[in-house]
Image (cartoon, rainbow, N blue to C red; front, side):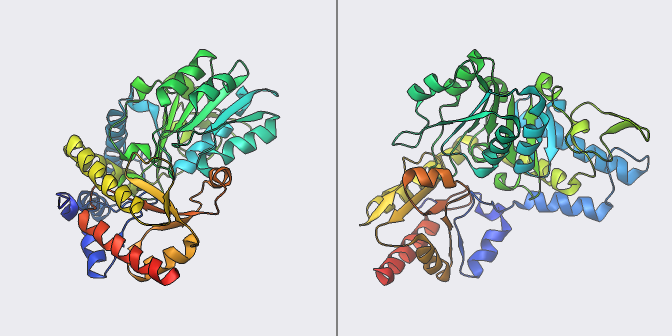
Length: 401
């Protein structure tokens, strides 16, 4: 089976990298961008950049229409109830910090925040620091041998003192979907606020926030084939209205005096300062491009790539796959080989993978590992990429052993 990608030509960087002898297998960190994005962003800057929401001239009106059109597109992509449930931030990390500070007044000493062992630092450190500031207890849900949160243990840890559950949808290390439906239901039963880290999950399939029933859902543009420096925070309208403002400046203020100020309601009240206008417009183009694809065909292609990747890794002596990957990424270690040494030799052969602890140090501590190699796939990858990866892997292991 050739495993060719019909979407490969839509991403100009792939042909450029190929001409340089590079094979890109690090999309879980940052994905390449479609031509549709480049055309739209170029068109925006070429026709005249301007700030949004605060001028009466044509360039500003044009930019504002495009900016707000992306909010509408994003709301439809997530099946949010309304456009005003979408807040643009300068990254997923900023969105989590916005929540940690915006919700702070709703916690009391002794309340519990529940996370899991496998959280990315962006969905760990803001809650860890909030717990320190407010005298809260951070409760950690363990994972099972396959890399998923243990529901039986979780049912005993999520209880009447649980005030918030923050959980990843898809592990950025293990590639395992988490049992969100069950976890969110456990949290709802005790009236806890629910936050979903969708940074990896959003890339694979369409996800309905109303069906999930979460209060907040966060993702990064740059992992979803969009521009860098942009994050999206979905929040149920009633929950967004409870957030305390955490950044102050232009745009979000409705009326200001020297001794006091009044602020807009969300989303504008949570978007202080000039936003990443070009990036937001670019994300709109990316979502438009992705929306035009056959989602089932993309899923089948990514699944076939993952199956070939995992099968090839398992066939090689001394290679241990971490967990049971389910979605387009897999991490592995090699007995007697340091992950950094292996990544260096792969890099010398033009193979772009990620080595280390992938911003998930507590997970690696629980696995008693110092790091791993992560191979992450995207819709533009094909079988030839994996052929080059395995050839380079075999050559590197021959040297290291």
